[in-house]
Amino acid sequence: MSKATVNFKRLPLFALAIKLLSQRNMNRLTAALSFPWPARMRGRGTKGHVIRKVILASILTATAANSQNVSPLSASAEDKAQARIAKEARHEIVTLPYFDVFDNIELRIDGYTITVSGQVTRPSLKAAAESELRGIEGVETVVNNIEVLPLSPNDDRLRMAAYRAIYGYSPLFRYSMPPLKPIRIIVKNGVLSLEGIVDTEGDKNLVRIRANGVSGVFSVTNNLRVER
Image (cartoon, rainbow, N blue to C red; front, side, top):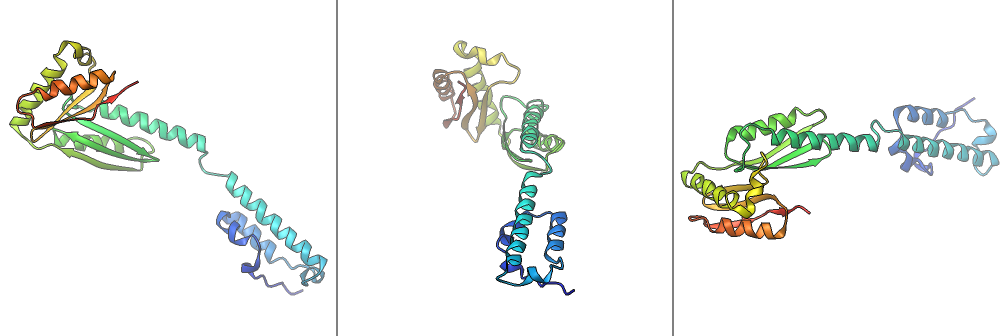
């Protein structure tokens, strides 16, 4: 008995389903398409031809649905894995040696890629951040966009003056209590940027006023976020 020749381009669901087929399901489909159909089912315009099309369409539909339902990692498990990565990444950053109030490191998690940015005063801190993040289980890529601030005795002086003006001011003194200071003081070439979080909009404005009062500061950018 001769085998029927199959024109794949004329199969109604082939173009859609082919993208969803696993190798095992493809083998099943190939076997079905090359099956030596009886002569009464090979002719066009016959009931057998209609039956054959129904069988093939059913195989394609079932196979596509099966491929969609099976994934190596469920959506729920993937979300949990990414939440764990985000939590561990934050922990690694805040526990870095020499990470202090004059550094600011921010994280962005995109699947299994971590992008780290911000400003630090020590080159070793930039390298340490990347090293620790790469060591987290499940992380595939770390993009290190951290800027190392230039050495400057004048900037060092401004940092200390701004620290005293902000954290030494009694209405803001409570922010000095946590080991990890929530208000980050970033100084580059005499320009001061405020990063981090405060409790109220009033505190945000008060911090800006105190920073503006530091002698020698060229300008102040207030990027503080209000934690509600």
